[in-house]
Image (cartoon, rainbow, N blue to C red; front, top):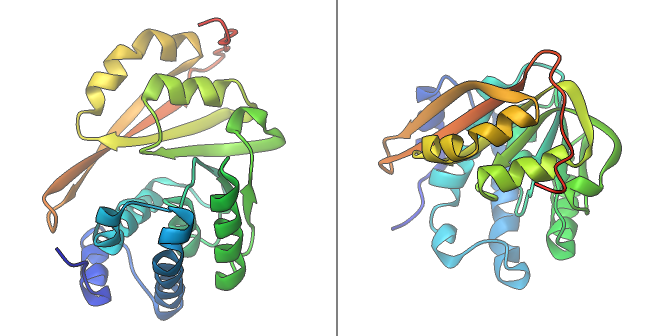
Length: 227
């Protein structure tokens, strides 16, 4: 099945209350071309995903911007080909975005994207998230990277979060099962569920869930390395 046109993409965004101007469209088109030209050489995504970059990955990445306040520092955990971090930055230039990618070839690709699209205050970190030092994030976004408990262990063992940092964890529509399995762990590390937001993509008949975790006031994290 072929991908959608940019005009259709614009209509889908409008249904979510998101606007697409010429500057953003220009950056998206250039980013899309880079994704297509570098896919095979860098193994950026699957052949199946090649036919749904816009209708799925672009849409699924951009809807997150409605949940992020102005002028925040955002970390995209396991950025890969740049979803959702690059898309977030294109639509929200007010944000400072860090694309965290441990694989060198993909990190080099992300650097090329930033340069070609002239994305200001967008940075690539070619490290594992638990290795980060001296950067404080307001929000960490994780999209289709790893199971919830494993993702939280990575995040909690880093030295890079603020006391009120939010975690936006995006997975399938059955995210409630992962949440239930990780409830005790989430509480032990000083977090709690703030909300679960459902995104319905009628054009591909798909539902995605976004779990928002917030710090418990006066909550403290325990040593997670032995858990």
